[in-house]
Each structure stands twice: as structure tokens, then as C-alpha cells.
Length: 342
Image 1 (cartoon, rainbow, N blue to C red):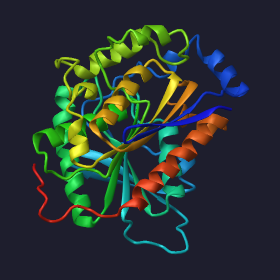
Image 2: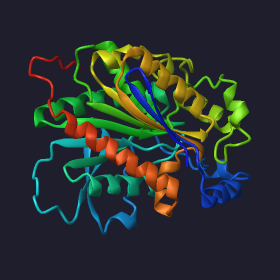
Image 3: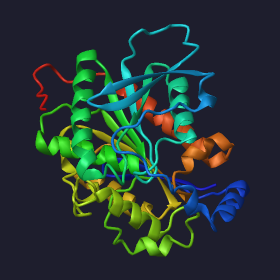
């Protein structure tokens, strides 16, 4: 096993390159048809959808649905609370699941949300049902999401909560774009303490030649599928618009608002070259964060921890420890004089 740690300005990068036999076999098995597993022939109706929690988590978690600015959010809490029960928890994670902006949260997303709330006892984990394409592409969904985002930040401030926005793949794209656009419109507005992105999609132009170079190694994604999903989400917007391609946004706004950006990338993921470019831009902008890059791993491999894969479990544990340190390092929230712009 080779583990390297290096600093990119304020960004700490941990690099690993080993691959277990089981992961190797899984990738070989998935390669002929893997892209079909993360695409859907079903068309999601417009707007936020009511979700049904995956049955396997209901033994451990209670799930409560609420509606914020017309979008549905699902709060997860452990059924067996810790010995010191906190009626009001000071920290919250809002999780935006991936799925190419076309599929609702999968069983793996629900299980990850449950794991987060079980392992982080003072954190409430909330899954967001955000509008999906093709009937709610970004030009339709993004204004709704921005309204919801501002409402969540305002409610968190009033409740004394420290917030992290978290997302994988398309969900990572959404949380990056939302936070940066909100700060672009109102630099003094409330913002989350941190962002955590897992294999995020950061550039919807899909013009990076490294995508084609990695395509033969990626067992899940190919150029055709990521280009199609990008076009569907962008809708009538230019795919280089920062609201859908945060790589082209004013990333320095995150540094000015002291928003930490943590993340995970995978070496056998066609989206990783653009995600790494985003990470490097964060470093140049002076943004703080910790990133794990694991060579020879597939897109969103962290979510496969539920299947017992060693790399996925270790990456999941690293992620949870990173989140724990974010919340416990600084519990200070903004003062009442901070602007809340709607």
C-alpha cells in the first residue's frame, strides 16, 4: 500500500493507489455494462418528488419528511439515541445524492445517510429531493434550489446549527454551484461551514481530453453518457455557465466566506480530471480542505461500502472522520449582523 500526503496551499491531499482483488474483479465484471446501471429509462416528473426511504434503514433510523420552499427534505435520526440525548443537535448535513440529475436517491444514498447519522451522534443528516431532468433542468430547478438554499441557511442560523452541504457526482455539482452562486449574488450572505463532494461533476462542457483517455478504464461512466446527462441538466443554458459548471465560477468567493471544501476523487473515473482541476483552483484561491484521491477506483466507489469492499469502507471512514473534525473544530456561527439576502 502506498499512501502519500501533500499540501496544495491550504488543501491537504491524501493519495492512495492500491486496489484489492475483490475491487479488481468487480470492475472487470461491471465494465461491459456498468454505464447502464447508473442510467434510467424512467422519466422523473417535474419538481421535487416524495421519496420512500429504503426499507433496510428503517430498523436503525427514523425518517421525517418536511417541505422547504416547495422541495421535500428527509431528516434521519437514530432510533436508539446515544446515552446523552440531544433534543437539539448543533450540526447538520444536507445530502444531495447523485444520479446524473435524472434519478432520485438510491438505496446506497439512503444507507449512507443512515450511516452518517449513526456515526455522527451530534449531527442530523437530511436527504434533499431536488428537482431532476429532463422535466426540471437547471434553468427550471436552479432558481428553486437557490430559494431553498437561502431558507435552509437562514433556518440554520436561527437554530444555531453549523451546516455542511454534501453531495456525490451530480449532487456534488449542485452544492458547489448553489453555494458559489448565492455568494456571487450576495457576498455577505450566510453560507455553510463546509462542502463535501464525492466524485463531483464540475465541468459540463465535457471538453477535457482526459475524459476520453480515462474512458477505457472507467467501469461505470463513458463519454457518451456523461455528455448526454450534462446536456439534459444544462437545458437551455450554456454548459460553461458557472451555475452548471462550477469549475468556471468565481471560486474565490468560497475563500472569502471561509467555506471549507473537502472531497474524494477516484483514478478510474472520467469525471476526476475536472474534479482535480477544481480542487487545484480551490488551492490557488486559498480555500481550506482535505481531499482523498484513490487511484484505480471507480466513480463514487465510497458508496459501495455497503457491499463490504475494503477501499470503499476505508474511504467512508476517512470521510466521516473528516466531517467530524469540521464540525468539532469550530462551532462558531455568524453573528446577527450578517446579511441574509433572499
